[in-house]
Length: 488
Image (cartoon, rainbow, N blue to C red; front, side, top):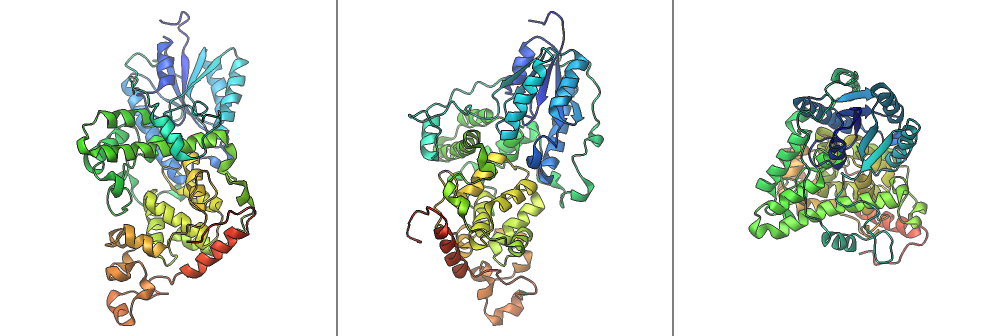
């Protein structure tokens, strides 16, 4: 039913840069009022969690895709720069909008922002309607039998899996749903998301297509080429064995509901185990989001209080070598170079690289999480914090603190033919497979023919694995209340 005054409503986009299956946008349209689509480039309100360089690249191009989709439907995305709270109040005053709609976001700063915006709008007699849209389940709705948040993934997902609703997806707006006339906004050339001094080193358009269309294509590629064998293939970094949907999910180019609905509708036949494993990976994303909602300190502090006394080392030199992919451990260096070149790193390699930083170098996990935040196109506060704490052993349902990945064995297991290392560490291309993941074991007689001279063409290992492992075990034992366990 059309609003009697024909006053518009505002839809405030944030991490939901799509038009389909968006409950809050559908509610705005169903109000009957013309919808003004709005996005605030707000780099101050998030504080230290403002998007990093790689995320800004993704945001720029996902916003362009969203803007084009809105224009096809007769509307125009209003993009302005500044504080979200002030800009929304100004936009309401300028347009006479009688309501603002948005999707809920669950980072601590976003939740605080929603409260402040709601209060500011209320003084203008305008309501803020926040609806779920970025997760499968609303945090707070999934609790254990004691009415408390789950702290272990397996029971959490077992509980969720039995409650997966039928995925009835919401349609995109049609022509006439958006307001025909909108206030002025910034032209894309004035968004200032891409800083000249921080341009990606490669043409990432060859690697990624941000936006809803790109998300649909990535999902279809996964179904056609990677779902079969996903349970095992997802651990092999040299093959296209994963969905690469993570940046699309973070920025809301596609909803997790639509991903699940598409998977459930696909005729997978004998691939049921692969499909269930992938859906469980969506569950791991969900688990981390719910954890951050209930325990908002875990973006900065360990989930397990005993780890606040962990004797981390301020190892600046080791940290720089790790960031630059010159640790002397090929699988680690390959991962860090992939990250720099593509804004992405294979998940198995993320675990190896994170373990090396926190357990071989005893560098605080927060340093690594910060670097990933700045360099990943899929940087997500909940998943990034949860992943780093899992590897460091201080998170909920974390890997045991005494589990220390051997980067040589990890490389030989998950990159046995060396295709991944050879792609990203080309100076090692001519090494025999048996020496590729431990080039310091190369016999002198093969050094010349391989073109590898340690300390010149490729670095010596910056730490000895056995020595670093013992130091890490001792450091972990020294922290207060460390559980006793076999070092294994």
